[in-house]
Image (cartoon, rainbow, N blue to C red; front, side, top):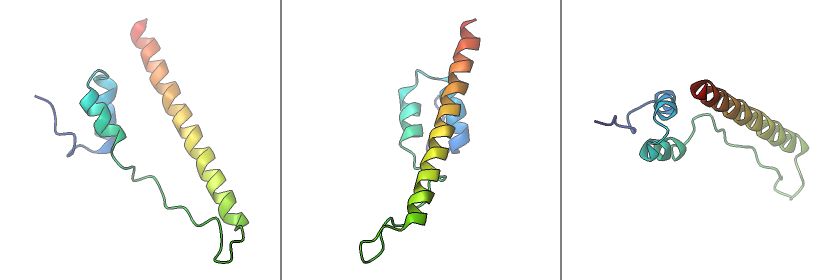
Length: 86
């Protein structure tokens, strides 16, 4: 019997997916779940249409951090796959 993916925490669901990679229902549930980590970004332009440089910098930094986090996650999954195949 499969667990109820809607009731699982994001971390528990992620762990389940790592153990059951062929369970496409679980994979879909994980990737279609909104992330609590995502933050609302401040506007890039003021009411006069002028760029707000500080907000642009904040967005760039947020995107860089997210890309680094995704890279670390991919590396971790690849390392786990390599250990399993040894």
